[in-house]
Image 1 (spheres, helix red, strand yellow):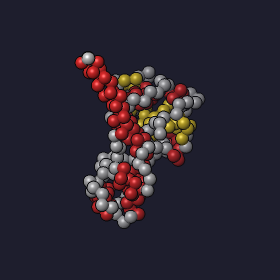
Image 2: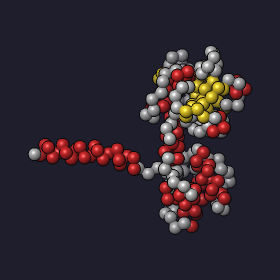
Image 3: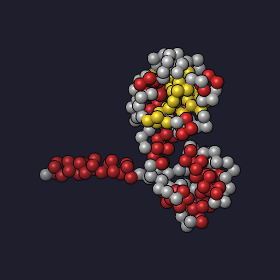
Image 4: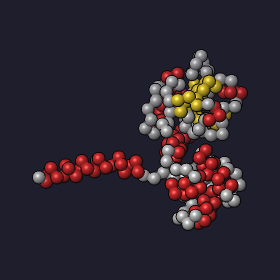
Length: 224
């Protein structure tokens, strides 16, 4: 009986674990960055709070503005934009928007931790990456499985216009052969990170003369 009871308790715990994980609240706080942070800054500025520049970087100035707004709304003034603060400030639910943003931020942070890793044709580890091996490795580290090569990666997810690029989107170029033969991960403000055959993992600009003429499209693979 004890064994059966213990098994029942363990089953209940395992059943509830995914629910607890899903229910964990997502939020914006100091140190975060991205398009949604910029939107928050714009709203704060519109309401009269000091925001020097809506640059998408959640720094001390934004924290102070959030605290001021929270105090005016009789919310806990901790400088963290949780679901209640977001709803009051933005007029919409935080659900969904933050989930994507947080995933994208983790992917971008992972990618940037490998800056300087040398290029290696066929490389799929931090000892050396080629472009698609780098992208695949970074996303795999964040529990998102991608195909191995750039041309096949170009077929997954959904197409994204260049004007609508967001952190974590994949950007593709035609280089040594027609079609998608090079890829990278979009950061922000026209920047992307990739494994360059000449410099290894580095950050480049989409508007650089070389990349601008070879850009062929982008894909969003982080599920909404």
